[in-house]
Image 1 (cartoon, protein in one colour):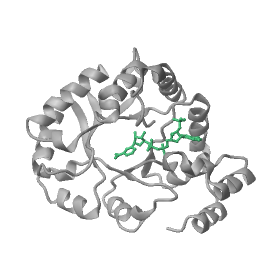
Image 2 (cartoon, helix red, strand yellow):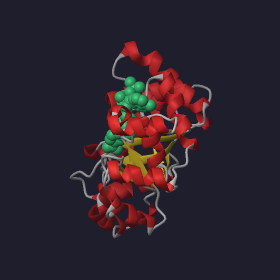
Image 3 (cartoon, rainbow, N blue to C red):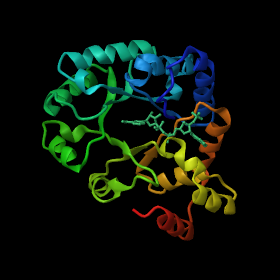
Image 4 (cartoon, rainbow, N blue to C red):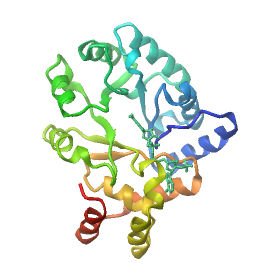
Length: 251
Ligand code: NAP
Protein backbone atom coordinates (compact mmCIF):
# COMPACT_ATOMS: atom_id res chain seq x y z
CA UNK A 1 0.00 0.00 0.00
CA UNK A 2 1.52 3.29 -1.09
CA UNK A 3 0.70 6.58 0.64
CA UNK A 4 2.10 9.36 -1.53
CA UNK A 5 -0.43 12.21 -1.77
CA UNK A 6 -2.11 11.08 1.46
CA UNK A 7 -2.13 13.34 4.51
CA UNK A 8 -2.16 16.51 2.45
CA UNK A 9 -5.72 17.61 3.17
CA UNK A 10 -7.86 17.15 6.28
CA UNK A 11 -10.93 16.74 4.11
CA UNK A 12 -9.51 13.50 2.64
CA UNK A 13 -8.20 11.96 5.88
CA UNK A 14 -11.19 9.73 6.69
CA UNK A 15 -11.21 8.31 3.18
CA UNK A 16 -7.45 7.69 3.21
CA UNK A 17 -7.53 5.95 6.60
CA UNK A 18 -10.43 3.77 5.39
CA UNK A 19 -8.49 2.78 2.26
CA UNK A 20 -5.48 1.66 4.32
CA UNK A 21 -7.69 -0.18 6.82
CA UNK A 22 -9.39 -2.06 3.98
CA UNK A 23 -6.00 -2.91 2.47
CA UNK A 24 -4.83 -4.32 5.81
CA UNK A 25 -8.06 -6.28 6.21
CA UNK A 26 -7.45 -7.76 2.75
CA UNK A 27 -3.92 -8.78 3.71
CA UNK A 28 -1.94 -5.98 2.04
CA UNK A 29 0.25 -5.63 5.06
CA UNK A 30 3.20 -3.62 3.75
CA UNK A 31 2.56 0.13 4.04
CA UNK A 32 4.99 2.47 2.33
CA UNK A 33 5.22 6.05 3.58
CA UNK A 34 7.79 8.85 4.01
CA UNK A 35 8.50 11.92 6.10
CA UNK A 36 8.13 13.80 2.79
CA UNK A 37 4.53 12.74 2.06
CA UNK A 38 2.25 15.52 3.24
CA UNK A 39 5.30 16.71 5.25
CA UNK A 40 4.54 14.05 7.85
CA UNK A 41 0.80 14.01 7.20
CA UNK A 42 0.89 10.60 5.49
CA UNK A 43 2.67 9.02 8.48
CA UNK A 44 -0.14 10.34 10.68
CA UNK A 45 -2.72 8.73 8.36
CA UNK A 46 -0.81 5.44 8.66
CA UNK A 47 -0.89 5.75 12.47
CA UNK A 48 -4.66 6.20 12.41
CA UNK A 49 -5.11 3.16 10.16
CA UNK A 50 -2.93 1.09 12.50
CA UNK A 51 -4.66 2.09 15.73
CA UNK A 52 -4.84 -1.04 17.89
CA UNK A 53 -3.24 -3.26 15.22
CA UNK A 54 0.36 -2.16 14.82
CA UNK A 55 1.59 -5.73 14.47
CA UNK A 56 -0.64 -6.32 11.44
CA UNK A 57 1.57 -4.10 9.32
CA UNK A 58 5.11 -3.92 7.99
CA UNK A 59 5.87 -0.19 8.02
CA UNK A 60 8.27 1.27 5.47
CA UNK A 61 9.24 4.94 5.86
CA UNK A 62 11.82 7.19 4.29
CA UNK A 63 14.21 9.90 5.35
CA UNK A 64 14.92 12.94 3.17
CA UNK A 65 18.52 12.85 1.83
CA UNK A 66 19.27 16.13 3.63
CA UNK A 67 18.19 14.49 6.92
CA UNK A 68 20.31 11.36 6.47
CA UNK A 69 23.38 12.41 8.47
CA UNK A 70 24.94 11.11 11.70
CA UNK A 71 22.87 13.49 13.86
CA UNK A 72 20.00 14.38 11.54
CA UNK A 73 18.94 10.79 10.73
CA UNK A 74 18.22 9.77 14.37
CA UNK A 75 16.27 13.02 14.84
CA UNK A 76 14.25 12.48 11.66
CA UNK A 77 13.59 8.87 12.65
CA UNK A 78 12.31 9.97 16.08
CA UNK A 79 9.92 12.43 14.42
CA UNK A 80 8.65 9.67 12.10
CA UNK A 81 8.20 7.26 15.03
CA UNK A 82 6.22 9.90 16.88
CA UNK A 83 3.93 10.59 13.92
CA UNK A 84 3.54 6.87 13.25
CA UNK A 85 2.83 6.31 16.95
CA UNK A 86 5.05 3.26 17.05
CA UNK A 87 8.30 2.18 18.69
CA UNK A 88 9.89 0.84 15.49
CA UNK A 89 9.92 1.19 11.71
CA UNK A 90 10.22 -2.17 9.96
CA UNK A 91 12.17 -0.81 6.99
CA UNK A 92 13.73 2.66 6.89
CA UNK A 93 15.12 4.02 3.70
CA UNK A 94 17.07 6.81 2.14
CA UNK A 95 14.56 8.43 -0.21
CA UNK A 96 17.08 9.26 -2.95
CA UNK A 97 20.86 9.79 -3.14
CA UNK A 98 21.94 13.15 -1.73
CA UNK A 99 25.09 15.03 -0.78
CA UNK A 100 25.67 13.40 2.62
CA UNK A 101 28.26 10.62 2.12
CA UNK A 102 26.53 7.24 1.90
CA UNK A 103 28.97 5.80 4.48
CA UNK A 104 27.67 8.31 7.04
CA UNK A 105 24.05 7.41 6.29
CA UNK A 106 24.77 3.67 6.52
CA UNK A 107 26.44 4.16 9.91
CA UNK A 108 23.46 6.22 11.13
CA UNK A 109 21.07 3.48 9.94
CA UNK A 110 23.19 0.81 11.62
CA UNK A 111 23.05 2.70 14.95
CA UNK A 112 19.26 3.04 14.59
CA UNK A 113 19.04 -0.69 13.92
CA UNK A 114 21.13 -1.52 16.99
CA UNK A 115 18.87 0.75 19.07
CA UNK A 116 15.78 -1.11 17.79
CA UNK A 117 14.27 2.04 16.27
CA UNK A 118 14.34 0.40 12.84
CA UNK A 119 14.41 -3.30 11.99
CA UNK A 120 16.14 -3.01 8.60
CA UNK A 121 17.21 -0.30 6.19
CA UNK A 122 17.27 0.14 2.45
CA UNK A 123 17.78 2.73 -0.25
CA UNK A 124 15.60 4.18 -3.00
CA UNK A 125 16.25 5.56 -6.47
CA UNK A 126 19.76 4.07 -6.52
CA UNK A 127 21.00 3.04 -9.96
CA UNK A 128 23.40 0.13 -10.42
CA UNK A 129 26.45 2.34 -10.06
CA UNK A 130 25.16 3.75 -6.75
CA UNK A 131 24.38 0.20 -5.58
CA UNK A 132 27.93 -0.86 -6.39
CA UNK A 133 29.42 1.94 -4.33
CA UNK A 134 26.97 1.20 -1.51
CA UNK A 135 28.07 -2.44 -1.58
CA UNK A 136 31.70 -1.33 -1.27
CA UNK A 137 30.84 0.74 1.84
CA UNK A 138 31.30 -0.72 5.34
CA UNK A 139 28.05 -2.54 6.28
CA UNK A 140 26.60 -1.62 2.87
CA UNK A 141 25.78 -5.30 2.37
CA UNK A 142 23.09 -4.96 5.05
CA UNK A 143 20.89 -3.03 2.61
CA UNK A 144 17.58 -4.95 2.45
CA UNK A 145 16.20 -3.72 -0.87
CA UNK A 146 16.14 -0.85 -3.36
CA UNK A 147 12.85 0.95 -4.09
CA UNK A 148 12.68 2.13 -7.69
CA UNK A 149 10.33 3.29 -10.43
CA UNK A 150 9.12 0.16 -12.22
CA UNK A 151 6.02 -0.45 -14.26
CA UNK A 152 5.03 -1.52 -17.79
CA UNK A 153 5.90 1.93 -19.20
CA UNK A 154 9.13 2.29 -17.22
CA UNK A 155 11.25 -0.83 -17.70
CA UNK A 156 14.76 0.61 -17.62
CA UNK A 157 15.76 -1.25 -14.45
CA UNK A 158 15.35 -4.57 -16.29
CA UNK A 159 18.60 -3.97 -18.16
CA UNK A 160 20.96 -3.71 -15.23
CA UNK A 161 19.53 -3.09 -11.77
CA UNK A 162 17.12 -6.05 -11.55
CA UNK A 163 19.75 -8.62 -12.64
CA UNK A 164 22.29 -7.01 -10.27
CA UNK A 165 19.87 -7.30 -7.33
CA UNK A 166 18.81 -10.82 -8.35
CA UNK A 167 22.46 -11.88 -8.23
CA UNK A 168 22.48 -10.85 -4.56
CA UNK A 169 19.07 -12.32 -3.65
CA UNK A 170 17.97 -8.74 -2.99
CA UNK A 171 14.27 -7.99 -3.51
CA UNK A 172 13.27 -4.80 -5.33
CA UNK A 173 10.28 -2.59 -4.51
CA UNK A 174 8.40 -1.26 -7.54
CA UNK A 175 6.95 2.19 -6.99
CA UNK A 176 4.31 3.83 -9.22
CA UNK A 177 3.30 0.36 -10.45
CA UNK A 178 0.25 1.74 -12.32
CA UNK A 179 2.33 4.72 -13.47
CA UNK A 180 0.44 7.08 -11.16
CA UNK A 181 -2.89 5.96 -12.60
CA UNK A 182 -1.97 6.32 -16.30
CA UNK A 183 -1.84 2.58 -16.96
CA UNK A 184 -5.35 2.12 -15.55
CA UNK A 185 -6.80 4.01 -18.50
CA UNK A 186 -4.33 2.92 -21.19
CA UNK A 187 -6.51 2.03 -24.19
CA UNK A 188 -4.68 -1.03 -25.55
CA UNK A 189 -3.86 -2.36 -22.08
CA UNK A 190 -7.54 -2.00 -21.12
CA UNK A 191 -8.58 -3.96 -24.22
CA UNK A 192 -6.15 -6.79 -23.44
CA UNK A 193 -7.30 -6.82 -19.81
CA UNK A 194 -11.00 -6.88 -20.78
CA UNK A 195 -10.36 -9.92 -22.99
CA UNK A 196 -9.21 -11.72 -19.83
CA UNK A 197 -11.94 -10.36 -17.52
CA UNK A 198 -9.58 -8.24 -15.47
CA UNK A 199 -8.79 -4.52 -15.39
CA UNK A 200 -5.81 -2.71 -16.86
CA UNK A 201 -4.58 -1.80 -13.37
CA UNK A 202 -4.75 -5.44 -12.30
CA UNK A 203 -2.78 -6.54 -15.35
CA UNK A 204 -0.16 -3.86 -14.67
CA UNK A 205 0.17 -4.93 -11.03
CA UNK A 206 0.27 -8.66 -11.81
CA UNK A 207 3.00 -7.91 -14.33
CA UNK A 208 5.23 -6.22 -11.72
CA UNK A 209 4.68 -9.22 -9.45
CA UNK A 210 5.47 -11.85 -12.10
CA UNK A 211 8.93 -11.97 -10.55
CA UNK A 212 8.58 -13.07 -6.91
CA UNK A 213 11.54 -10.87 -5.97
CA UNK A 214 9.54 -7.74 -6.85
CA UNK A 215 7.33 -6.13 -4.21
CA UNK A 216 4.73 -3.75 -5.60
CA UNK A 217 3.21 -0.83 -3.68
CA UNK A 218 0.16 0.64 -5.45
CA UNK A 219 -1.46 3.65 -3.82
CA UNK A 220 -5.19 4.22 -3.80
CA UNK A 221 -7.49 6.23 -1.56
CA UNK A 222 -10.52 4.60 -3.20
CA UNK A 223 -12.02 1.53 -1.50
CA UNK A 224 -13.12 -0.20 -4.72
CA UNK A 225 -9.65 0.25 -6.22
CA UNK A 226 -7.91 -1.13 -3.13
CA UNK A 227 -10.06 -4.25 -3.47
CA UNK A 228 -9.37 -4.36 -7.22
CA UNK A 229 -5.63 -4.02 -6.66
CA UNK A 230 -5.64 -6.75 -4.00
CA UNK A 231 -7.20 -9.16 -6.46
CA UNK A 232 -4.29 -8.65 -8.83
CA UNK A 233 -2.14 -10.73 -6.47
CA UNK A 234 -4.08 -13.83 -7.49
CA UNK A 235 -3.43 -13.38 -11.23
CA UNK A 236 -0.85 -15.51 -12.98
CA UNK A 237 0.16 -14.23 -16.40
CA UNK A 238 0.34 -16.81 -19.16
CA UNK A 239 3.35 -16.71 -21.51
CA UNK A 240 0.96 -15.52 -24.24
CA UNK A 241 -0.26 -12.51 -22.20
CA UNK A 242 3.32 -11.70 -21.18
CA UNK A 243 4.32 -11.72 -24.87
CA UNK A 244 1.45 -9.39 -25.73
CA UNK A 245 2.44 -7.02 -22.91
CA UNK A 246 6.03 -7.02 -24.21
CA UNK A 247 4.61 -6.05 -27.59
CA UNK A 248 2.60 -3.16 -26.15
CA UNK A 249 5.35 -2.02 -23.77
CA UNK A 250 8.74 -3.04 -25.18
CA UNK A 251 11.49 -3.15 -22.56
P1 NAP B 1 0.69 4.43 -8.42
O1 NAP B 1 0.50 3.57 -7.26
O2 NAP B 1 1.20 3.83 -9.69
O3 NAP B 1 -0.67 5.19 -8.80
C1 NAP B 1 -1.43 5.88 -7.84
C2 NAP B 1 -2.54 6.60 -8.59
O4 NAP B 1 -3.29 5.66 -9.36
C3 NAP B 1 -3.52 7.28 -7.69
O5 NAP B 1 -3.91 8.46 -8.34
C4 NAP B 1 -4.70 6.32 -7.60
O6 NAP B 1 -5.91 7.04 -7.48
C5 NAP B 1 -4.63 5.63 -8.95
N1 NAP B 1 -5.02 4.21 -8.89
C6 NAP B 1 -4.57 3.26 -8.03
N2 NAP B 1 -5.16 2.08 -8.27
C7 NAP B 1 -5.99 2.27 -9.32
C8 NAP B 1 -6.90 1.43 -10.03
N3 NAP B 1 -7.05 0.14 -9.71
N4 NAP B 1 -7.61 1.98 -11.05
C9 NAP B 1 -7.46 3.28 -11.40
N5 NAP B 1 -6.63 4.13 -10.75
C10 NAP B 1 -5.90 3.63 -9.72
O7 NAP B 1 1.66 5.67 -8.12
P2 NAP B 1 2.44 6.23 -6.88
O8 NAP B 1 1.52 6.66 -5.81
O9 NAP B 1 3.40 7.21 -7.44
O10 NAP B 1 3.33 4.99 -6.39
C11 NAP B 1 2.92 4.09 -5.39
C12 NAP B 1 3.63 4.35 -4.08
O11 NAP B 1 5.03 4.21 -4.25
C13 NAP B 1 3.49 5.78 -3.56
O12 NAP B 1 2.22 6.04 -3.02
C14 NAP B 1 4.63 5.85 -2.60
O13 NAP B 1 4.30 5.19 -1.39
C15 NAP B 1 5.72 5.09 -3.36
N6 NAP B 1 6.59 5.99 -4.17
C16 NAP B 1 7.92 6.06 -3.84
C17 NAP B 1 8.77 6.89 -4.55
C18 NAP B 1 10.22 6.97 -4.18
O14 NAP B 1 10.91 7.90 -4.63
N7 NAP B 1 10.72 6.03 -3.39
C19 NAP B 1 8.28 7.67 -5.62
C20 NAP B 1 6.93 7.55 -5.96
C21 NAP B 1 6.12 6.69 -5.23
P3 NAP B 1 -6.78 7.13 -6.11
O15 NAP B 1 -5.83 7.22 -4.97
O16 NAP B 1 -7.55 8.40 -6.33
O17 NAP B 1 -7.65 5.93 -6.09
